[in-house]
Image 1 (cartoon, helix red, strand yellow):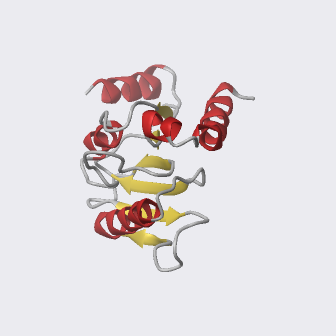
Image 2 (cartoon, rainbow, N blue to C red):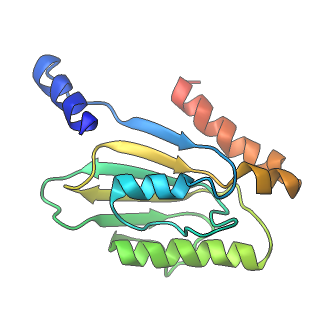
Image 3 (cartoon, rainbow, N blue to C red):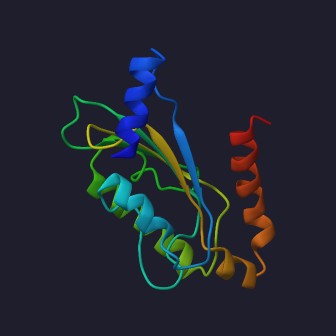
Length: 162
């Protein structure tokens, strides 16, 4: 895998750990943003469906940890229920919580600019970060693009060091 080569070059040639790469996924509704994240994680984390699935930003930090044969997760977010938030969660627990949150937003016919934060520790992932944003077409048509401009702008400025 290209990421393994990148990590090896940093460790052997530069004598330091590889930096976290960040991928901010912006695109049309149902264009496969959540599916891309799940391909890297090799696990279902977010609701994937035809139409609008993701209704708030999902900020995922992956940490390679050789001691974790199975992924161990930490989930947080201001709008999640107390039951959904926690450490040492399974991927199944996270999937249920993230899906329930997105379905609740869908039942209210709304989007949220409040991020859900997920940390995944596993020997099956590379050190990287994904920000899975709601589809832009649906958000724009609902007149909510201004509210989601803020997280997009925030993530982009954060990555540029502003």
